[in-house]
Image (cartoon, rainbow, N blue to C red; front, side, top):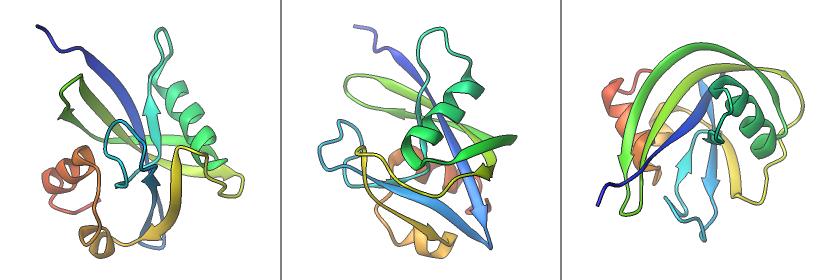
Length: 133
C-alpha cells in the first residue's frame, strides 16, 4: 500500500538569537508534546506561501513576511509521509497568542532547543543544518 505524502510549511522566526517554538498538544496525532516551529499543512489548491502565512496567523496570532528558504525535510509516520518546507520569516505585526493546537510557546536558543523533546522533522533539519539556523 502506498503511503500518501503531505506538504507542511514551517516558519523560522528569530529574534536576538532566539527562535520562536511551540509545544504540540498531547492529543496531537503526530509528535504529541514535542516542540516545533509554527506552521502546518498546505490545503488542497492552496499556494504554499499563503498556507504558511495562514498557519502562522492561526497558531501564533502574528502577521508575517516570508523571506528565504532554509530547507526541506521528510518525516515518515505509519499513516503518512510529510515533507516540511522551512522558511525564514519576520513579524509584520501582532502579539503572540497561541491556538488550541499547542499548549505552550517560548523563545529559545539553539542550545536550549537541543535539550528539548522536539518534532522529528525539526530534529532532522537541525542535524542537516549542523545546528546552524
